[in-house]
Length: 66
Ligand SMILES: [Zn+2]
Image (cartoon, rainbow, N blue to C red; front, side):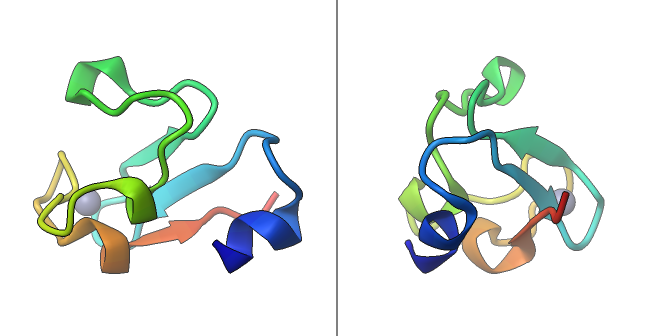
């Protein structure tokens, strides 16, 4: 997880879907969509998709710059 290292370990990191702007932060996860706290798109199963628009998660999500 190169990106996480650059941003510094476990600060809140917000991931944003490129396709629909759905976002979640790694500190809280998103209980509404069964995303546990501390998970990033890279930790999810390969077939995990954006809960809002069904884009394939790992490729669809970017880290939001603060
Ligand atoms: Zn999406």
